[in-house]
Length: 130
Image 1: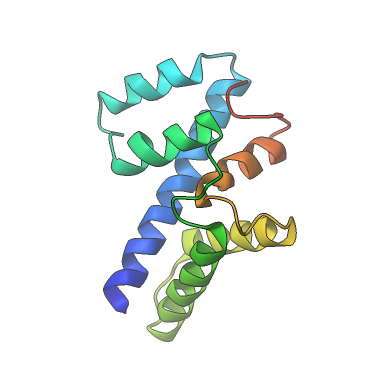
Image 2 (image 1 turned 120 degrees about the vertical axis):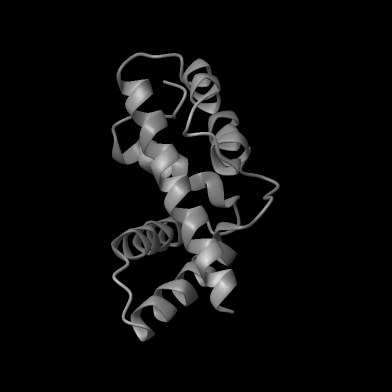
């Protein structure tokens, strides 16, 4: 259970960071797919940037690869585990709030990468592609 909790909190924090980076690129007027491809050639390369960020940009939220509602459950478990073990986990706490917001929007049945759309909306963007 601890290993799965660690996996999910790492994936969620990386998805949040990828969404923020894509939103920054979009707000700066960059071609965010070209930016993502460039980032994949450097130290930012990750499965999240390669797969999840690609689904964010393609707005491939349905059918879900992994439902946002399941990620919400998993990130709550990870946050509870961090708190139970006295682990300072502000990124986990923040992303848990993001998945609560997704649930409150009625989007729990969509792919977990819908977090990218939420970041876009909170950034004043209609979508991450700009």
